[in-house]
Length: 136
Image 1 (cartoon, helix red, strand yellow):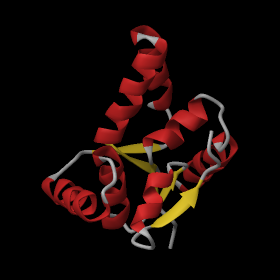
Image 2 (cartoon, rainbow, N blue to C red):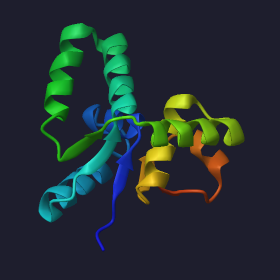
Image 3 (cartoon, helix red, strand yellow):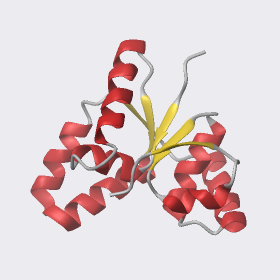
Image 4 (cartoon, rainbow, N blue to C red):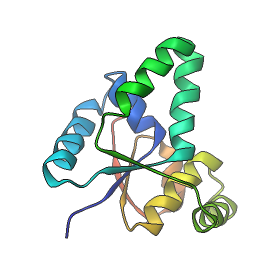
């Protein structure tokens, strides 16, 4: 069985900003292309990447970057009632930021490994598998 990966917003930002962990994301992208197994990203976390990029770089650079990201082997997963309900449960129990809970919920529901450097996810214990990237 092919392993599935969910990218947290900071994993995407680490890659596009060539921060620590970028090489690991590049390996995952290469593997996703080779295996025809796209990386997963919640539409909510997609919006988080866009928002953070816009705030840091401005509108046009953020739009160009998002256009580049759209060429990745990436499946943007719409938020549905099941995912949002699971995210609410995770946030309530583990007290993590809501956008992080969205990514965790997607990973749990898809039985995927979450890719992140955000140590807030440590609060989840062993609830989901996490591939830890180095911190920036």
